[in-house]
Length: 203
Length: 203
Image 1: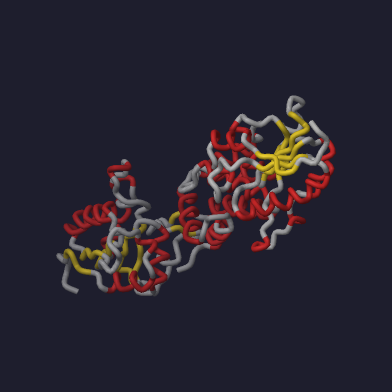
Image 2: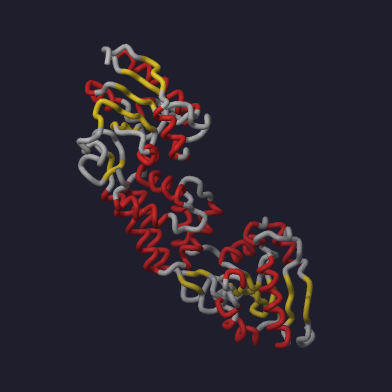
C-alpha cells in the first residue's frame, strides 16, 4: 500500500516549510484532508494573493502592498532617523512598542559566514544613498552573534560617513531574537539607546 | 503602520493549522514571502490537487485517490481480518511494519468526551456490516486514554456479534500515539496480540 501521489506531493511541499519535518508534514496533510474544501481554497488563495500583492518597499525593503510602504509614505515620520532591522517582523515589533517615529531599513537577514551569508546578500547597499538625509542610524539587529556582527559591520561602514550611529539598548535579554521581545522591553531598549559614534555635525 | 491585508489573510489562514500559533504563522508567512513564485504556486496547487483527488475509501475509510483503496482492492489480502485504527497515518505505519496482511478500518478519530467526540462522530457504523465476513477484528487504536476507551467501546459492541476481538499487544510504549511507534515495535505488537473475546464458532 502506498500513499496516493497527490498526498505525497502535498506532504513534500509542506515539509519544505521551516520547522516542519516529514512527520509534521504528514500530520498537517491528514489534518488538511479532513477540512472542508472552502478552507483549503481559502488557504490556497491566501498564498497566491499574498505572493501577488506583496513586495518589498523600494525605499526601506519592508513588506508592503503599496508602491511605497506605510512608514516611508507617512509625512509625519522623522525622516532623519533610520532604524535598521533584520526582518519585516521586526518593524511590526518596534511599531507595537510605540516608542519610535522614524523610518526603517530592513536588511532581510544577518551576516552569517556559517550559513554563507555575506553583506552582499543583504539590502545594505541601498541603505547608503538614504544616509544623506539621515541624522542618526539606529542599529536594531538582534543581540545574537550574527546580529552583533551585522551591527558592527554597519557601524564601521556608516561611521566614516559622518552620521551618528547608535545601537538599540541592551534592555533586550542578550542572545534573544528581536521579534520575540515584549513591547515594554523593546520600547525601553529604543529610548535607552547609546551613541557609539558621533562625528556628524552638532545637533 | 499595519500589515497589508493579504499578509494578514495569509497569517490568519496559516495560524488555523494545528500546532501553528500566531507567531509561527507570522514567521511562516515571512518565509513564504521570500520564496520564489513557483514554490508558492506548487504549494498552492498541491493543496488544491490533494483536496480534489483524495477521498476516503467507501469500504475502510482510508485515504485514497481510487474508487476503492489499494488494500481493499488487493485480492491477496486476508479479508477475514480487520484492523481498526484511528487515523489514515496509522495504516501507513502498520503497513511499514510488514507484519499484517488483513484489511483495515479507519475511524477518523477516537471517542473523547472531553472534546465532545462521541462514537457517532467516528466511522463505527459502517464497520458493522463488514463484520459478517470477518473472523477477527484487531483493535489497533492508540494506547492513550481515548484510544483505550475507544477500544473498550468497540470490544463491547463487536463481542456479542460472535467475532473474535483482539487488542494490539502492549509492545507499544503505553501513553504514546500509534503513529510514532517504530516498525519493529509495531510489528511485535501486532504479532503478540491477545484475544480478549472469542465467542465465535471454533476456527
